[in-house]
Length: 500
Image (cartoon, rainbow, N blue to C red; front, side, top):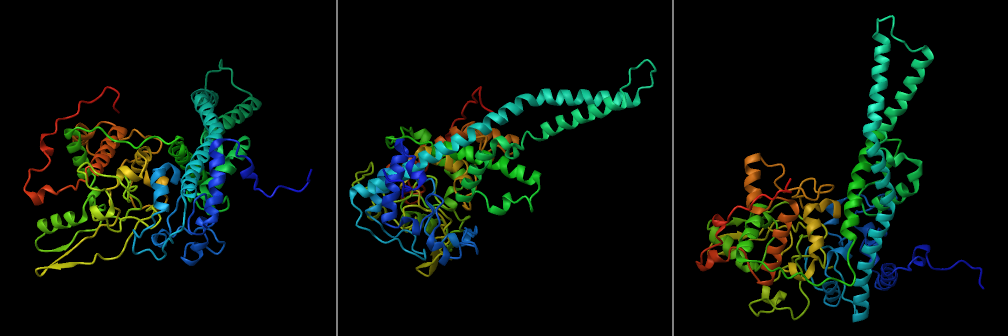
């Protein structure tokens, strides 16, 4: 028997579970095609970043998200994000989607086995990420729960000691049994310990018994760009600052554990059964959230014609805040998919424009610069969209990922320019998008779009999927003279008993 050390990395030796096997095999295929040279897939060093002003002097990511706009996208968590069939299809049908990128993804002679292997790699990696996070978060959850449960009792004990010390100081009754100097000293020491226990409720990151878990999670935070090394430096950050950092990281990692906890075999594509009333309600929510300010949705020629009709004096559609990825899918579907009208749902028949990056993923905000105007009969028009087209929702993205994504984009994709439309969703996934609205408007929004965050996001996702299947373009009725959606006839949704 050889006594030489194995050549396989230790992490690859621990692949007894199926997700680990898929991840290990897929990593070999990804290495074969040098995917890691351009993409951060598993917190790996990305060679191309050195040439794009994305690394510091030590070779670490420098958080230059403006430069990242033009770099190959970050694929961390890709297995939870895209439909595996779409991923495999795209690898064999690479095409230009973001024409302003400074680097192009080459086409490879990827066969069916390798294409499926890379899709499985993304899935296995997401599942192993979820498992690893759960393993390290569980002891922390238990510690926080135990400390929280004892908090009331600890505070009560501390208050009794404070009251006793105060009375001992002020009591004038000669019959009162005052404490000796030694007794006062012991009581103050006990009070100090209790107050430290109260303060330590959130200081679990300093607990020696959790040192291994904290070190592992810190490594994860650095690899996934949730935090920078200096944030953990005790020399420049106080205990209070580091406690705040870890409190936020705990919520974010718990959220990401849920995001990456995906199924295999893969669930089927979601085909929403949606009534016309729900479709109209979903479009009203789409408009309320101003999604079209950044995202085109549907046939871009039709959208441009609608804009021209509504803006006869010309001009540019005002670009919104740059977005990093649509929450709903935007790329080309697998071949031979057809819409409900019988037309092929492909770029040729849908007038697909550069709506996503060359890699089948649009993970950073794209700013192609000023929109290029077109002249028609002496009037200048232009399009200022700054985010991907949402028309391929049903083909590309996984609906459960979409729910998490629109709840908290910055947690899934640090540096994204897509705003979190559901405030404080991390740690409170049920929060409403209207949570911070004035009370009267809040009631109105809830009655129109649903009383909880999940209900609202389900409505939006159902609408986007259904519209995608129909090859639907919002606003097309403005060109045909047909009556538009009856937004004003929507009935109010009754408030459920369990609503916040």
